[in-house]
Image (cartoon, rainbow, N blue to C red; front, side):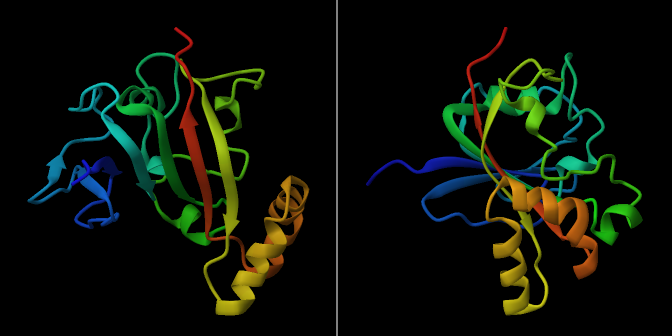
Length: 190
């Protein structure tokens, strides 16, 4: 039987993401039992070895962290340390046009479609010690069934349509709910 790949559910609370083919470790300040590790995600380093995870899943957590960015001990560099070189980080964050983003007092940052752009090596400024490659980014509208799917299709056809929908059109449909990203770690800059 092949060895299971390792996945980390970052800030998953008491919810197991249940990825098929993966052994999932859950880490959160409010973890309770089983394969849940109780840990404050702003406390670095995390209790994991270098290059331990094939996938890091971060849904509705990064916007809560004060030390997400920075040249000295930041969460993005810590995630870079614990993900395998060929790993993938999957990120869901509330979009700035989403009313929840503004009404949740623990949100520390707003995450539009260009939010992680400075992590790429071509960026003029990088606010971390390490680079990531953004392999996918989408605006997500999760309401109204088929109409919502049509809005997603129209908005995510290319970078230009993403810009137009995010900058101008999103407010006509009540705002996007989420920004979605897939990132791959690049070699350390240090």
